[in-house]
Image 1 (tube, rainbow, N blue to C red):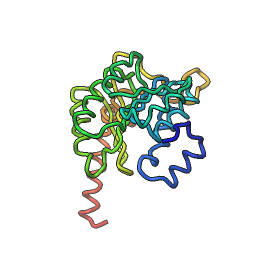
Image 2 (cartoon, helix red, strand yellow):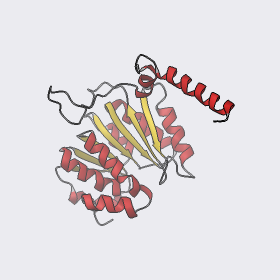
Image 3 (cartoon, rainbow, N blue to C red):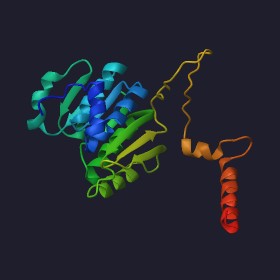
Image 4 (tube, helix red, strand yellow):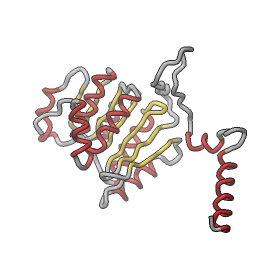
Length: 238
């Protein structure tokens, strides 16, 4: 790899349209960093994601801390470090253990085995801000997904979180941390006339949705109404 200069907007769009593999997820990663106004960004596994996150950090004013264990391959990149990018060459567990500030966003593509992924996540989760996000790549990859998904499930056991997996280009699992010892990430969006933002972060969006009051009724009520309507439709042959 000759360099990891930040991507341009045009390059990100071009990679999304023409690229394969992780390139299809670069816009997602970039958007998450921008949307969170991420300040402390961890990039586990140097590559195309590093370039997308560096571009985002230039806009948010944050710092991307990249880690890779391949010293021989990436040692020459140390010269490219700047105000928005720092490089650590060594084991991910040593790197994560040395992070002292709360983390806003993590991109994990450094390991794909059960032991290392679980270890990395177990070290990362206590250091995350409330509503911070961890992205894990290759969770739909045909010969690696089983170990990675098992590691994610076990690392998250007993914790409060939200999770979704994008099921294309080897898969990208996005984990939102719902609790932590560090202050929550502030919402971004359009500022209203009264000083509030049009974005309001709520805990446990799935549980919250089940209890949400919709015109005086819960979602469970409306779901039952829908099931009843479907049964009547099938019975009467509509």
